[in-house]
Image (cartoon, rainbow, N blue to C red; front, top):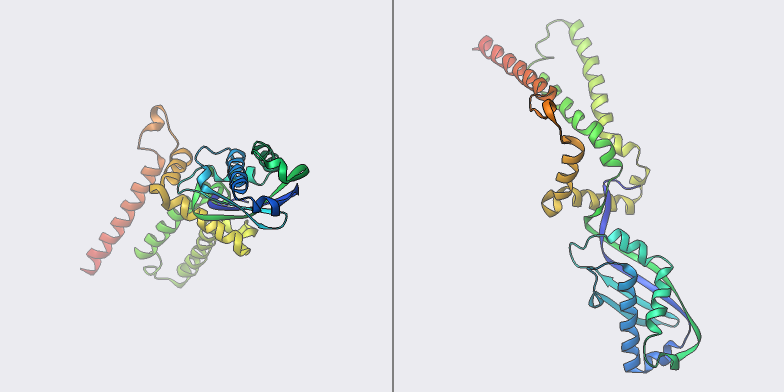
Length: 274
């Protein structure tokens, strides 16, 4: 359901539900508690599979009976947050925590049996950036087929109107025909520009809409527009070979004649009214 991609996350909130581990006794032992929470943080880092995430970025604490609360704050420009989110929300997190806690010296004193952990990802807060490893979505699928053509058509229509394509017509019959033509042009332009939104039902959900806005902003404006430049060169410009590599392609020739016709019309009007 991605629009231009997945917005990058800068915070994860996790809950670890524990069985057969006496958290009250664990919290009462200051030294054991500190070692256990450090082990939990290390397990979260290992489960994330990220080399940029460090133990100091993870805070673990016992806040409720039977639950350990974990907060993960990512550094700016951390990549691969979508993969991190998926791994922290998987069942593998619980087994990783159990593995790390079993290595803590003295932890068996507060265990009442085989310890089990169930991890739940409660919150993933997105920021105004895009995960560079998850670029792609509905907006980009339609953009390369409709948006640039729609903007060209809109520009040429405005140029025609400004050059007198409608106001210079003398007969009422001709004007009526042009009205129909410009209505059709308007419908085409509108449908091409609005296509990504018409087929995106998630835009009516406030949370999804905000994620889309954050991803859209991150795609076009962060990191010097790097994500957009890479996508544009790969999908719109496309590397060419041989004669196709020449700048004198159909698009340039068409633009040249269109601008020449527009300038000629303006020049003719200038001589008439001079």
